[in-house]
Length: 303
Image 1: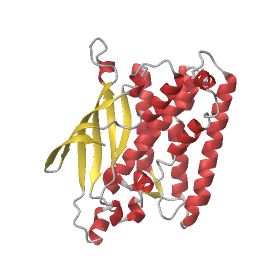
Image 2: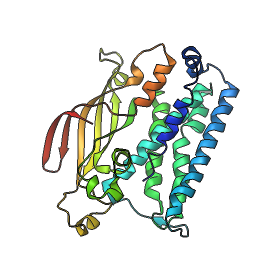
Image 3: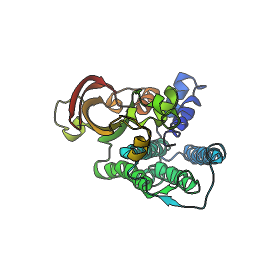
Image 4: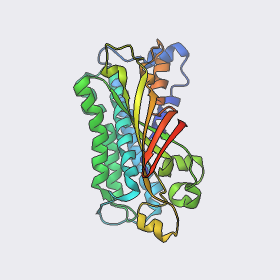
């Protein structure tokens, strides 16, 4: 339930560069060809400070509102039709990508980019999971750990196999009718719903076609995306939904669509490349085929 909080780190890092002039900013954002120790130290100190502050803030501001307990584990693998686990895969993948990119920006060699950068998401989310383990409301989930490992492994595996990311993990969201029915769980207002309403979230594996067919004339920016979502969720468990006396039918959704890989669009500006890299974690709206139980629907634009 806290997996998207880390997006604020992306925003903070980006806004902090706004005081630079255009040329200085572009130079600052250009990756170093060789090891740049000041940059590396800046990255390590910044990540450590942000991660520590985030964990302390969560512990003091979030967990303090709930009863504490002895460390315990829970098996929540059957909840939310696994949409929460998809959130963990997405977050660990994207944090790992950012961690590796920052190491690349510092001129760190490839091996250390993967060892110390790409594991950023797994390490941070594991620390959050430990805090969950001491909360009576939740608990340490091995399913969450497995999802974190899957996201990190997907990034590292592609770098080792292809030396590039041919398949990205992406996210899209639309507001639904379900959040007003249980705003405590699904959020009240757009910002909370983006973080909490699993009914409106879709997670995508977006594959770049040209990366797989390098001799073809396929546009380098064109992706094909397969998505997963769910609908009819008012709580984690189906039996609790039944107790709420709703007529919602919980169902999984599968999607097939096109997408744009912004990282494949050529530009000489490091600033624009940085902006593209941030936006690229969002799946672009395109005509989409939805397949679910007893239903097949074509959407002109789906997000």
